[in-house]
Length: 541
Image (cartoon, rainbow, N blue to C red; front, side, top):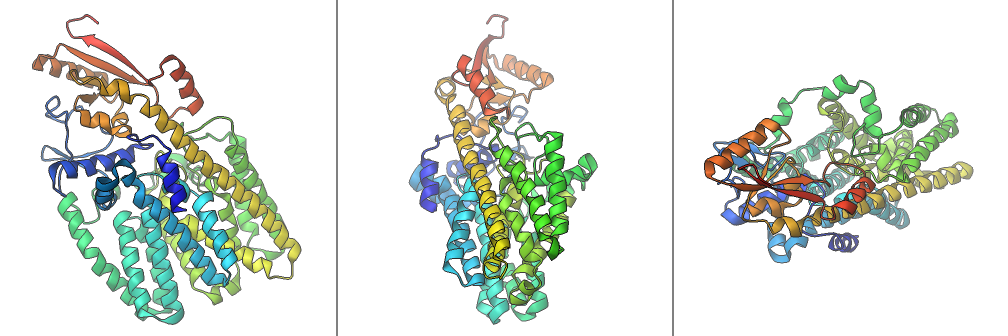
């Protein structure tokens, strides 16, 4: 799996990112290399043009004491440094790809452990690694797969500690969980759910897991405090202070429909009203009916409608740039619900209790803090990535249980529906990989023309493009107005004060989240993806 990810990464354009988040982490990594300091502020090559940080071409940064500091978690840039130094650009993706493969492997191990079946373990491995958003995030410079692998490692350790009372497994679970939180602080809420169940069932191993997690956390919390000013990372305090329940206030109950399918964002496929309500009501009906074993066929029929709508979206002719819906990204996870409702399963293993507890804890926190379209540009809800392998495990256990039951007619029906759902998930996954490769190829078109302009400032409205194409940021002549006319006038005033007579005005045609076919049409007239206009401040052009 790791080799597949790396091959795909090697086939995508270099020096450009799909998401500005990736660019933000890369700029921090480069800042460390250029300054030789882990607690460095971001280098700002254009600071001679913008000493007061008024026109910084970054979508997010933290201003402090006249310097700029990284907005993003520091863990991934730090651990990626040696790989970048050895392998260059491709080194950035070694760890996300390895963690994606490890996530798939750990999922297979969980299924094999709980079913005693090598075959079902292999199926779970490939389904997780190819037909869920794990495949997409394994090919991006993001820390989500690393955190997810840590969560799964913690779960395996806790399950072993629960079953055998092994303190060593509990200690390893704590270490793995702590590292998961280092990469993504929100992973703590899944782990709280796991740990609560272990505490009830096995208090002594739970205590050792907590102690090892705390001991492991001390070094990275100190590192975070030293480098960012907060023990849990640069954005944690700001996110805690953000408005609560904003998603509910803005969307009401529709927030749930948006979370399971898609919010009305221009970067994703905007569901027609009929499709959104059909999928949402069918999901609700299928979930409610699942509680009544005698109505299983009706529940499956309702979930079949959901899978059909997801398949319809997967094969839309328009090339949307993002997928936000949790069910839309991998509808095969629906079958995990049936496993969680099997009473015998709760007696055989702590897994259903741990999964349910983590869903409840994380669900409450998510609804408390989420906003409409939480996660921004993404392919599958990245904040929920760790639940995909967990639900694949639950779905695999359900099918394995059905395969051993007397009701083979039900098993065959569920199996075929599951196969169709997996094919939809695989289609969405492949579409995401192709979309990212296509969009980054569009971004890369601008590099030759823009990197040739070094003697004059370049002013653009976009605050994201220099993060998608970070070579432009490090060129030292890129400024951004954020599309604000007043800010644009201040830029011009600054140029006049400095005696600058000419600059370039840059319009970016490829970074507005439009469908890819719309961007392709623009490129027919402007193959570089940008429009440059030379401006003479004396009035001529």
